Length: 330
Image 1 (cartoon, helix red, strand yellow):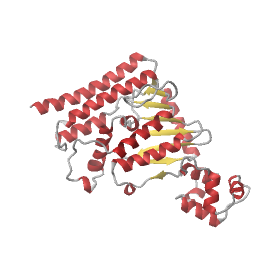
Image 2 (image 1 turned 90 degrees about the vertical axis):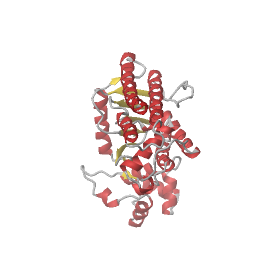
Image 3 (image 1 turned 135 degrees about the vertical axis):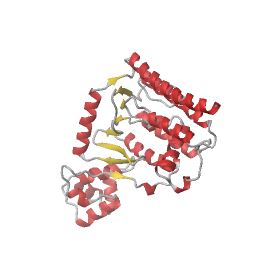
Image 4 (image 1 turned 60 degrees about the vertical axis):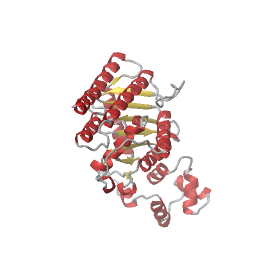
């Protein structure tokens, strides 16, 4: 059951487990369904073929204990660190979520809300450039300054597709007072260390963050997600925004459908882990529920608290902007 659950989580949207088993093992559909129902045991050769095809460690699977969890991840060397390749991986994951029956997501925002950031491609482009050059120190970025240029048509369409998938899935999201503070420090760091080809571009990014704040505030007010510049949807796109007044220690995405649930965790700066381990997912969901219980709903209701949250956020952005502006004038 666990093996089939892992395989199912790796299938492309629209692929049926029975058909995939039939094609992979070269057996009839009836034989595939007998294996799915545990009426016929898998042979060792069949196990080997499935584990090899879907990159599953069978040793880890049969030696599972309460303290052992199987995670999936994409090795960093699998990326070419372009905006396009990074977005393709995220879109693939979201398309799987979107095609679940009755999908829902719950997430904690630890500093950067990457999905909402996609409303403003220039901010995403800067974020990935900073990761690649400063944190991961990719050789191709070593002597390159960040400069103003449009994202490619491919990257723009990928970002838009991710947003559309994210927007169609009802979400419960927990924010904290540190929203985008680290992102602003990155802008300021690049400005002070002369990493912008045009230093005034730092002001442009700050202005885009003000637009990001205004759009997020509007979505929270309506309780619906929608792409910047487009009309508010008449139905669906449910967005519940909660404020945790302390701090979110990490970024966790819990997803669920009618028949499955799982967890995504960010790690190694820009990578992410995924698991469908039932015990781990249940434990994580219980922690998220407790965190939610200690947070305040600020979407649709609690206008005063919502306005104060965004006022403080925008005040922080303007403070960073004034520092850069004063230095440029000097």
